[in-house]
Structure formats: C-alpha cells, structure tokens
Length: 129
Image (cartoon, rainbow, N blue to C red):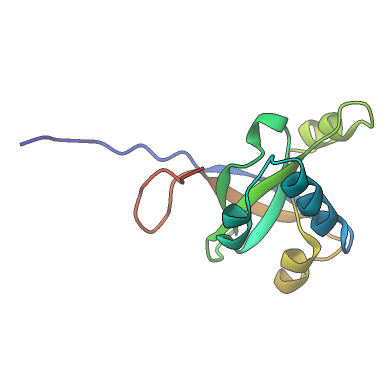
C-alpha cells in the first residue's frame, strides 16, 4: 500500500481586469507568435495576465472568494517598463482578468478578491500546460 499526501497551494490576492477588446488582441498576437496554441484558448473559460512572462501558456484555476473555480489560460504578463509589475506586486494583484469574465462576475472597475491554484479543484491533478 502506498500512502500519498497531496499538498495544494492556494494563493489569495486581488484581480483587476483589462479594458474591452484588449485581451482578445493579446490572444491574437500570442497565437500568431506561437506563444500559445488554439487548443489552449479553446479549452478554458477565461483569460488572464500574470506577473511574469514565464506564466504565459499555463493554466490557473481562479475563483472569487466563496465562488466557483474557473479554468483560465495565462496569455499576457505585466510590463516592467510601464510599472505594471511593480503595481501588481505593491497591491497584491495576482492576475488581471479579461473584461468579459470580470463583467460576468459583476466587478467592473473594482478589484476582486480571488483564490488561485494550479491543481484542478475537481480531480486534484496538476493543470496541464
């Protein structure tokens, strides 16, 4: 018999959102540059910008506190030159969501307290890239 312990890290912080149409343009560019693939775009419910370029193409599970988990694809990252990374770190902004997702949640123009995990909350498996 094999005993295993699954340790799940859940990070709590804030989300903001992109302006209408911006995330869609980012996705078009990332597809054109082969940073992400169409099957990745088709396999998620939302799109986010993370803090670092190394996150692009990865799956994260995000939920508003006490809400449902949503499978999201990281398609963009914060800029250093424009102060985006510093702003995210200073204000504990973990991700910027696409406009449509934030609109659906009903938090346009306001920060959203979120939980984030890399493992599937339904199966416990690590999210595939």
